Image (cartoon, rainbow, N blue to C red; front, side, top):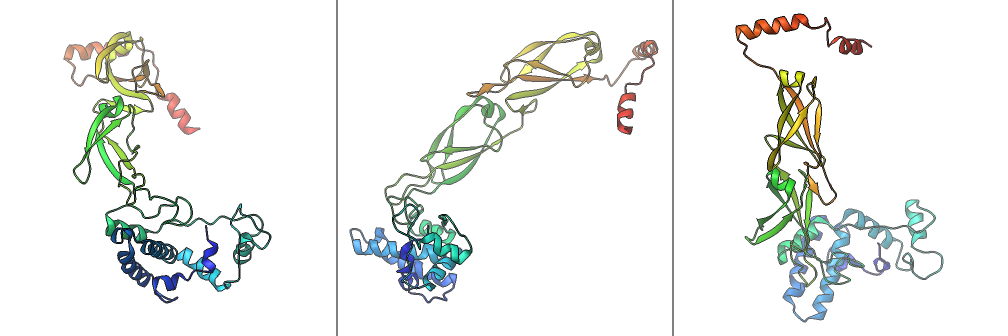
Length: 329
């Protein structure tokens, strides 16, 4: 949130730039001062540390177009103006009254959140070995305690069984350091896993950042995920579907199971095998076997004649009549 210090601090003077300085000028001025006053270069120098905090605060405001606009507007009102932060002591004429008049937001206390700027973070990371300076831990960046290290994004590709069953794998960081990762059972394609404390270290003794790991899962030649269920297409012969049969159905990483196909089973019917899907801490899915009638591609002359005789004995019904009727309605 905007600080009452904005009325009293001349951020342009702190950075040594004019009020109409461009973004590039501000960035250049900040880089020069940051190198000179950074605590790593001035061990035990409290004056240099205070100066570094001042220039960091000034840069965080002036390098952000929206913050700079609000800062200029507040400064234009003159140093005599004052406001109280939400929840603080004080009478009327507070912060909400100032911004209510400026931006048409009346009544109630308003909150203005300022996000970290890209150039500022990149600069500190490039100059001093990574890590965001002054992650908000109360007040402005650079104030309120040790800085948390930067998060790191990474990706890995898993085979289908590892993603479904879960396993422990080893990844390698950009520095060549091995990182052990526990993959939970049932992780899905595109899912993100947060590895706490495995990211960039803090530049000033704070907690390390995290690794945000995006998981890509290779397709399986037989199975596919359907939530916690596993789906598999099972071919059956015309005779098995018409007369009924007991068939074998594959399972993921285990022996096949026997499944009963009832007489007259049509293509597309789903047969369920309980508890043979994805097993996670939140529950266990089923194996869904989708029946697909396998039509023979070659018939002997004798078999063809017998099939024609069989077809002649069937009722004169067209299984597509209902489909055509629905399409016309």
